[in-house]
Amino acid sequence: MTEVGVFGFIALLPFVLKIGLGILSDRVNLFGMGHRKPYIVIGLIVQLLCLVFTPFIDPGQHFWGYVAIAFTLQMGMALYDTCTDGLALDTTPPKEQSTIRLYGRWAGHRVIVAASAVGFLAENVSWQAVFWTLAALTLLPTPLVLAIREEARDVEKRFDWRAFKSFNGKTFLAAGLGTLMFVIILGVNQLINPFLEEQLGISLTTAGFITSLWGVGIVGGSVLGGWLLRKFQPKPGLVVSVILLSLSILSIAFLIGPELGLIVAITVVIFFGVTYGAYQTEYFAVAMHMVDPRIAASMYAILMAFTNIGQGIGMYLSGALADAFGYQVTFLVLLG
Image (cartoon, rainbow, N blue to C red):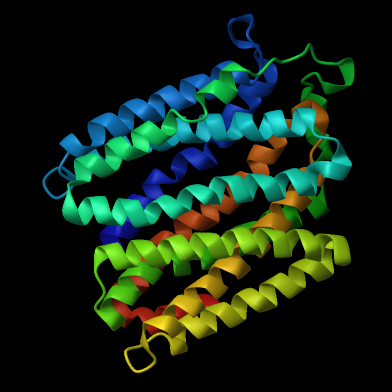
């Protein structure tokens, strides 16, 4: 688990480097094709090529080579992710940003349903089939990307270094909250599948099926997060989602075990997915409201970089703690 944590930490570094990618996208109209579209295309191509070649590298024999290709793959993903966020911020009216964030989470986490297929393919066909299936999925958004028509930017939306003055104490407080919470969320999330396998003795296929249900929970949590944003002001809504998230982590630590069975475990994992999705949706929607349109991708990437730093720390920390003290103690440490 420590090596898994190291791998996860390094593989997430491109999502910290999103800051530079956001500034590049905001400033440079690449090949005269736009500030978003060409970067999204390049990112998808990088991801596609890496997924095609990944199964030819044995992580057991060539760990650092595997880390390198994962880093490159994630760099492609970070590039198109940053520019997709920038495109959403460029084109979505402020009143609809929480809604578009909700649909974004829903659409993105629908792909998690493929986890069942991934587990089945890994167990019954090969890992090559897994990566090539993911490569094929990378091609799915291509028609949508090619259909993008970027309009010339209004003066108030053109890149301006002075716009970085919009960062203030409130912005950095939000960034700090994002870092801390994602240390916890990703630290817990990384351990769920191995914890299930240890406690219940389930197969990889069954673990993939449970992960799919977790993804369905995230979709439901996105709806819940949107409702909390509409029902309450952002701060009370975030407090409610943090309380729910804490309860779900306690449930994982104490309600998953052979004596309570698979049904209870699945229910707990879905509950965690709901609280995970609710918090993510609320945090990302609040972050969207904070950005200055002149540096939309840059500023949003900076806020997201703090969350990704938290994810990297959480993955390394949880892996090391799990090896040293076991899963349940690790869950409680992260909760504390």
